[in-house]
Amino acid sequence: MNNDLRLKIVEMIRTAGEGHIPSAFSIIDIIAHLYDHVLKVDPSKPDWDERDYFILSKGHGCAALYVVLEKHGFITQHDLNTKSKPGGILGGHPDRTKVPGAEASTGSLGHGAVTAMGLALGLRIRGKRNRVFALLGDGECNEGTIWETALVASNLKLGNLCFVVDENGSAAQVLPMTDLSRKWEAFGWEAQDINGHDGKELAAAFEDLSFNFTGKPKVIVAHTLKGKGVGFLEGHGAWHYKIPNDTEYAAIRKELGQ
Amino acid sequence: MKEMRQEFADTLKEVGTADQRLVVLVGDISHFRLVEYAKACPGRYYNVGICEPTIVNMAAGLSMAGLIPVVHTIAPFIVERSFEQIKLDFCYQKLSGNIITVGSAFDYSTLGCSHHCYGDFGMLKTLPSTQLFFPASPVELNTLFKQTYQTNHLNYFRFPKETHEIEFDAAQVIVGRGMLVRPGRDLTVVVTGPQLKNAMLAATDLSAQGLDAEVLYYPTIKPFDAKLVLDSAKKTRRVLVLEEHSQFGGLGDEVLRCTREISELKYDTIAIKAEFIRGYGSYAELCAIVGLTPQNICAKAKALR
Image (cartoon, rainbow over all chains, first blue to last red; front, side, top):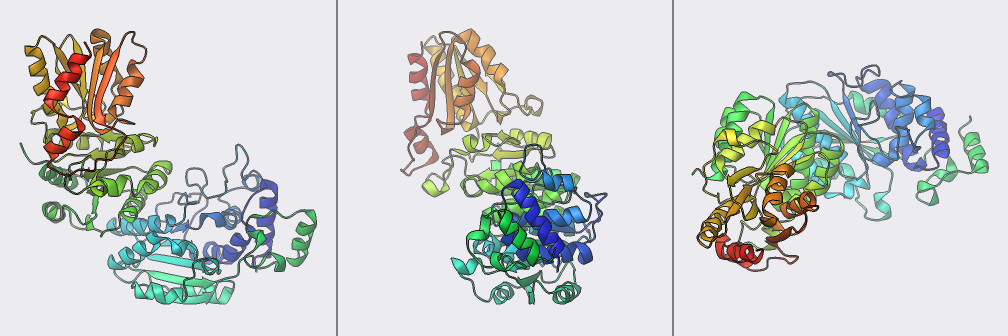
């Protein structure tokens, strides 16, 4: 699934000379699904007042967001080619002041999700029915502000807010948090666990969401594999921030069937 | 003179009633003062809880939704604890909003370092979209807030518990402008906050001793009114700055920056040295520890002759 986007991620990062390939591979299926099937957005009007909002809170996975934004026409192939270059609009983290379709500038973990919560409250105050989504990392869930936000969003009954947690095992390397969905439930959220690389499970999870102004906020804990799609990139090792050489690139292309 | 915290509550009610975009978030403080605001502005008041970085960050989300947030709690918990949220979520992303704090400098004079905040001007000045205000009378807080709350800035209002007890007209209070409170020939005293009271007492004493002090008052720290102090300092060539702030990064630095080319300028300051205030006492007793007394102001002024 999404092997074409995976290859595009690798090519963009090779051209840029920097980037997080495995972190992007673990979320590419989720982001592609959101933009293909869930979000109400209009690439010709990125600031459309009626749009749904998607905030990539784990900003270092931005390569996945960029290739999806390019696929949907928010940005161009030229933008991908100039990532992390002088004059380019794409950097190592999303920047709302430069990138059409990027709703928040993130990078420091534990911010984007909180912004999303404030946005959901603001839209409710204005009586607006737009939905707000944020994608968090499981390592990011070590940040205290995430759990402050979990408590506040639940207390404020922000039923128009949905978080997706990319549970790719990063936190387990350092500061494990087992059974994440039960923790969110304990904070008053409506939680479900899915396989974040399974199209049917993604479709079912987002179809099941009932957005409203008075109910529980929702969280989908998406179990994923860091580097998913290319065997030697998978897992938690040297590839976190490594750039493939020509030989490795050829091997990636082969595995992705491209 | 009305209590500053009451003026804060009254101002929010006045503005919030007229402007449906105003939303107030507090961190479990001033709750009872804001009951009238909450009644007048239903659905636009939230006592969020004790989680200041989250309050600041979620306020940026409110701004993104087209609202005008006001965040209120004790100064160090916003400025120091939540500095990254101010920097990244408001300023870098070009989102606007308002922060209004109590606990100016060492107002919580018996509570120790955790509740003191006297580096706030220096910290916030470094962020490009900030405006900084230190209104020390009710009319200043009301007027400055109304002039600037909906502009494209992150506005920081640090209001003190004590006022300087001088009545200004609203027409005298303008964002970005200092005020000539007492004309003089021999010495320029530049002051912000409630220390205007001590500055005026000292000016009277100095006058009796043959030293005619000009007193300039700065309710706005940023954008800084350089012309007012520059014109005065060119005339007197003697400048004394008084502030309830660290000697680094506050009003004194601004004065030095804009007067640096005046030849034979003599300059001194009474501010908080590069040490923590570790003692306890009343506000006035801590002022005395810092040296912010009419007597010390007179002594410093005479030494500049």
